[in-house]
Length: 209
Image (cartoon, rainbow, N blue to C red; front, side, top):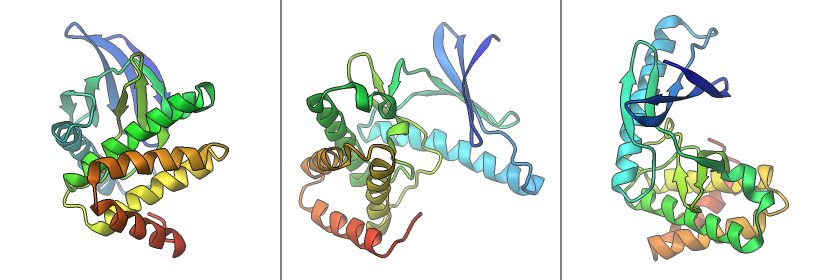
């Protein structure tokens, strides 16, 4: 099986391959040599199981995500759709203000759909958003996602968005955050204000997850 390495990181290795007549990716979670083998085994199994489950749940909530085709617990890998596109993180400085605002509004709308379903992403950054050739956003990397989300968890999710924007896109952070929150409130309605307040409380008390 010929594979092309796309990303090599501490948390995952991403390979592109063609299989079953489809363009796919294989996401593998490598060993952590500093952990006990039994703990590492359990952690990696839990992460790939969670990611497969949450990708599917997110899609049922109306959030575009890659479809999962196979899971290999021995190899600690998942095979899923390859999404042709670029990370939002990469294209932010290359697009105009209107395009940037539109994409961020879409980001907020999708995050709100997750939260309405009591799901949090866990790592909602612009690195985990793929913009395809038609200008649509796909959410990826659900390894930290959780169900039965509380108000606190939703506030943390939005806090993580805020923190990611100010550290990665500091020169656009205000307009991007406003667009995300506008898109979010348009979908979630009156409940948004309570979640925004919790996001502010988390930020003020310096609580980082």
